[in-house]
Length: 257
Image 1 (cartoon, rainbow, N blue to C red):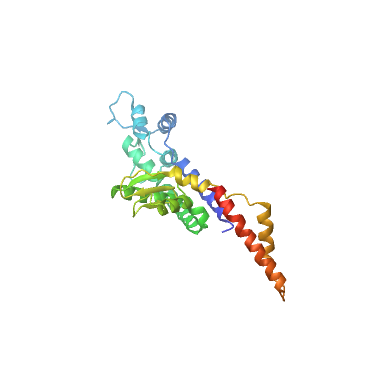
Image 2: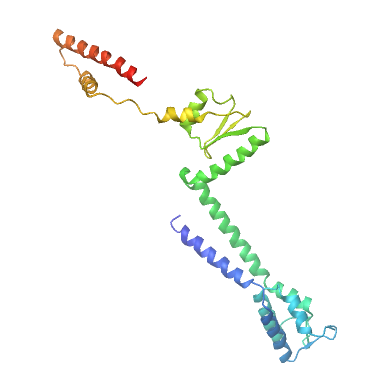
């Protein structure tokens, strides 16, 4: 796993090099190839009746890989092809087929490397921690949203987190059967409804009332552990503290209301 980045980089470089070899030959390279064969003594077949035979080759070979054309050129110059006339340049279609055949192994090698690269990337994506899989879950929830829409569900809210959805469901703002797609923060309802989110958000944003210094001190004292032996006087004082807290709470609740 530690060498994985280097392996991926090497594969990408090799695929790029193979892709470059399979790039189509340019018009100039095609023309130079035909002229080079002619200068070596090979002639253009008389069956080509075009006014400019070289242009015919350019048209037929324009999508041929440059690497294949160069290899075919060298083999023709050396007479390495069997059953090919050494006096005439192959017809445009024949030369194109020969050049493509020279690239067959390169194409197969590129396909193998591309498949290996995809397999490694898929394996990495499956073994990543769940925190790295959020995007995949978003895709899953987006597909789920499409399925819900096909079933007649309606998107009634966006940007809804877990807490707000729980409050919406508790307040009966949402019909039964509503679905929260939390990875994309959407709520889908089986029927079209208008959701009053402002009231829920206001409720969620309400801060708890401030605790008075007196109540804080009394609560702190009440939380202190009892001694191993509690006297009647201490028990009476503890009861007084509880009574003081109860006397403070109604006032604060009334103030908050």
